[in-house]
Image 1 (cartoon, rainbow, N blue to C red):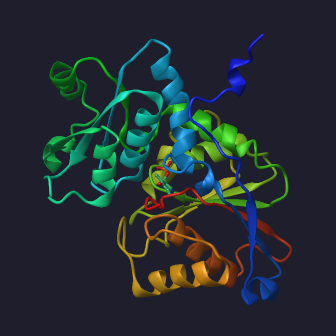
Image 2 (image 1 turned 90 degrees about the vertical axis):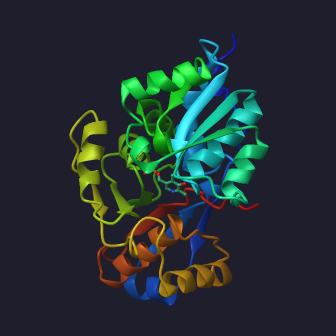
Length: 296
Ligand SMILES: *Cc1c(COP(=O)(O)O)cnc(C)c1O
């Protein structure tokens, strides 16, 4: 018999765990490992691969021909959904927040080259993105589609990330990830043994609401997780000179490529938490490199 559960629709490359080094880690008596999940697929990389996995299966089963989703002009989710649709032979539609700017930026020109149809809507209209009447209008315009929410976060996305967490083994005390919508953090909490601590670092300013989002998506109450909200570096998509320098240093010293929206903030936050003694001596910290490096 064919075991369907072992198959994946999208191609997948197994990824390494990379230990990174710094005199700070020796002083603090900690080890820092990075799960290089950014290397799992050339275009549908990192957490987006896992968030899409079961959504793509779900879309294939009843035979949807089209995927429709939402995002900003620089969205990794738009980029990944366009690539996944292209690889699997779906049509795709991206509803983009804001006005069209020409020439298209690299994210949107890549999406377009994958065949994604782009529709721009005003920021006000974009707020309607979960409103059934608005979705109904999109159905009238585009015909039947499989809807993937903004950022790709839904129960099937959480299920995919949960499966990813189960591949991580036992060799760590803390599991750290960047948090946008909280879908990835939720999956990691669900898929990680209860004796570990899972720590999300919010890349959004004012990220305290994410605690409620994750609680809502977790079906049972657990205490072994938390969200740090002080490492947003000015807010979503914002950056600082210090963060950019940190990212450059990591690429040189640890051969670790990071982006400035998610994983740069994650690793910089982990460094700071080590500095302030958050983890305690002897701790092994595993940070999830969730992708986000769109330029290949
Ligand atoms: C989308 C994304 C995230 C955020 O994931 P959520 O599930 O929305 O919290 C983190 N890292 C990278 C690189 C991403 O592209």
